[in-house]
Amino acid sequence: MDALRCLPGVGPRSAQRMTYALLQHDRSGARRLAAALDAAAAGVGECERCRTLSETALCELCASERRDAGVLCIVENPADIQALEDATDYRGRYFVLKGRLSPLDGIGPAELGLDALEARFRAGAVREIILATNPTVEGEATAQYVAEMARASGISVSRIAHGVPLGGDLEYVDSGTLSHAFAGRTRFQ
Image 1 (cartoon, rainbow, N blue to C red):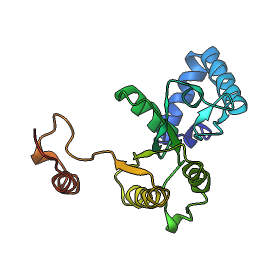
Image 2: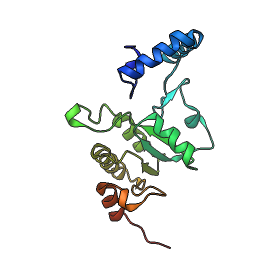
Image 3: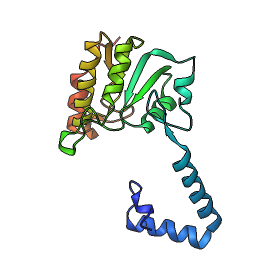
Image 4: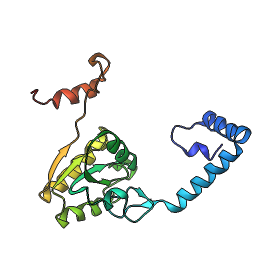
């Protein structure tokens, strides 16, 4: 039960239910789960170019010749890549920060690998970055920091839009989101 509690969103009760379910009803499933986690922990590393999770030195996206190496989307976590791949037709490459700037928590540029990102900027292959950090205070600060780095290298910078979700009712949207959406409005065509 204690081991399952290391997962995000799994509290004591959820961990207890999972443990009992595996031990009472699906011991072979428990063994498969343990083997899969052991294999993943031993075999999954980091892509040397974008820093996402990968079983090979270069992930599938970085190894693909069909991706545009001149466009780089900056995300906070490997899961963000999957979300963008599932929802968009983006065909550039990625860079995973593995977090966001948070001086109070001791997370600075070095912890996010911004030296490696800056080296990619200086190499000259990147012509545009798309900032896709989360719309939190830390995510916005991180986006601003990365944008300044990119501009110093002559790279075009854009930011994903934030605001009212598709199908959302304005009366139910929180004031921060609504204010951000209103301030970032675009011309209607």
